[in-house]
Image 1 (tube, rainbow, N blue to C red):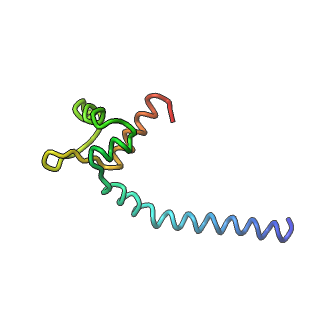
Image 2: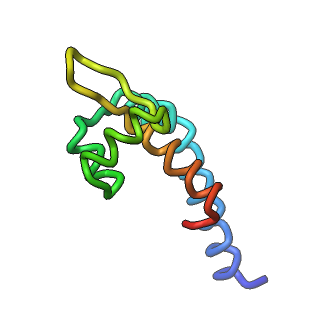
Image 3: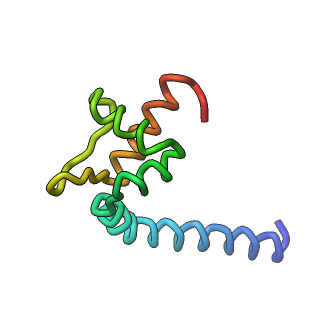
Length: 94
């Protein structure tokens, strides 16, 4: 192995190590932030690329998780992402 190959290999290892350390540190913060990120009905429908009416029907059928503040529906981003993942697994689409 030449010196330049060794240096490139070392750079790659260091880069991977630094990346992994950063991910280990920031992943819990990212997950927490996503868990607290919530959408209105219009925002959630836009996120799912569907109509407000379709989203309301999915809520009434118990297909998608939501919570209410007064009469307003709210949707956690993590719940929407879980629903998307479930749909992908059921239909085999990506």
